[in-house]
Image (cartoon, rainbow, N blue to C red; front, side, top):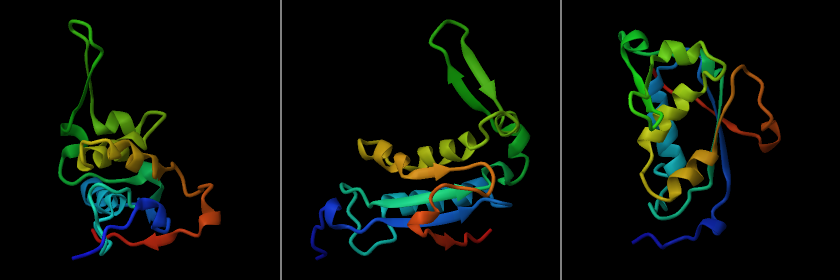
Length: 144
């Protein structure tokens, strides 16, 4: 049996993912597994894995098939008739194209109190510059 290790005893890990030409779903599943700590031998679903993931070039992600035009993101304002619908093409062309990847990863994380803790450790940037070079993130290659 693997012993329980508290989160404050785990070392903080940093990964760098280049989203240029990557498919959203495959990249999001890999990032979600890293944030949950499922790649570690001492995985515990009740403990934060202390894994940080930095994603660069978020505006250059790709969708498989015709999802770029056909997929829809729904949001409701709370008022009658207040349903807002956007396609990934609309979101990628807006001022925050990183929202597509954040939305995909959010849906793949567990729906509990650790979800927000894990999402705070996901840093998504438009372009190839990021302020986390001091942490020496390990570059992660994701297969398409």
